[in-house]
Image 1 (cartoon, rainbow, N blue to C red):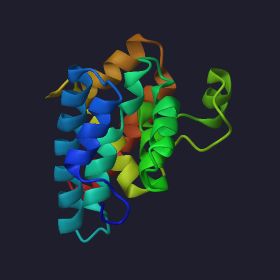
Image 2 (tube, one colour):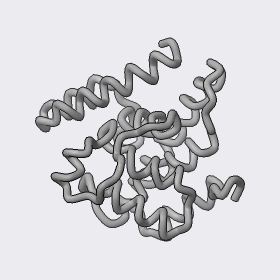
Image 3 (tube, rainbow, N blue to C red):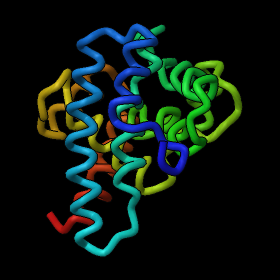
Image 4 (cartoon, rainbow, N blue to C red):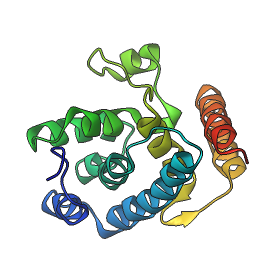
Length: 174
């Protein structure tokens, strides 16, 4: 482990050990691929981003889906990560990746512990961004994800996803 981060192989093994379904592991690998591409593009633009952290955080972002497929997988996953002794930056990526972020009010409604569930760091934002662009393990247009959120009456989430998408693509200049 460099910087306390597990290797790519150790991260995937952690998903397996926690009985993540193969479909979830494939999704995490697809998100990690896009997240790394995005992080590297940010680096080329001169932005300080930890590509290794992005990769490991993206690989582990859905580890909570080993226990639940509800929105709570973010909090459950953060707990699994803490118990596994993963660095706080990885725990934060897992906790903050859902729906372009979860507000304090929403977290309260879900009965989540008082905490910050909105992506703050560039690494957290990149993983959340990549997750919204990968459905199962295929890339989708952001408009499809936003439309899905609106159909589910998650208009605030749709707005956060659009804002996050605009922020990341703005940094990349495309």
